[in-house]
Length: 235
Image 1 (cartoon, helix red, strand yellow):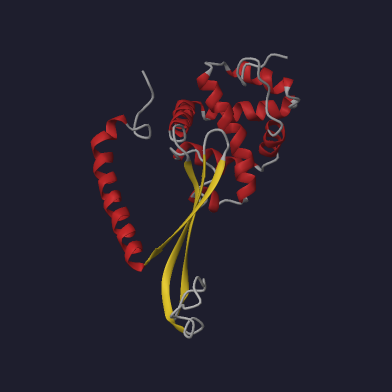
Image 2: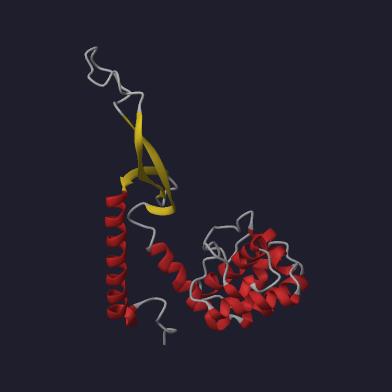
């Protein structure tokens, strides 16, 4: 079978049909909340740290939202990318085993959102541009450790070690921050990086991040007309 919605010589993923079934299984009021989110956002990432306010205020559970939003986001993106007609999409859904009633439901939903399909497409392009080139941070965690300071090290190189009478004595505590970064590249390779810093270095890092945030504000103001999130539909 040749699909138009999934690119040349490609087929839908194993998750596509079940996700679309999950969308069709939503209540009307839940689909209305999902449509309102699509229409109001410029960031179509469903795995943000916090759920969008519109979704949090609805009866949609986080997993319902993510499962139902993904196939709609995909169809809006491919609709724009491949210059499809709504009939092309309906045909492909039929080939995927979606019932006629469900296809009509999905089609009406997509047509309502047709004014934003280009915005969904450009958001996907921006997401791709943001992960190519170098490994990208997937997650970051920072914890504080109250570390014991002893009267001597635990390692023992020489029998004449001057600290051999005090190494068991805990003379106090010092604060150490442990920063863990999980990074991955576009090939799927993942790496865990962990570093430590004392209070002074942590405060320097915090100051650096605050200054970088101020620089970002200046940069955003300068390039605002060219930012993907600010640009309107192409002529």
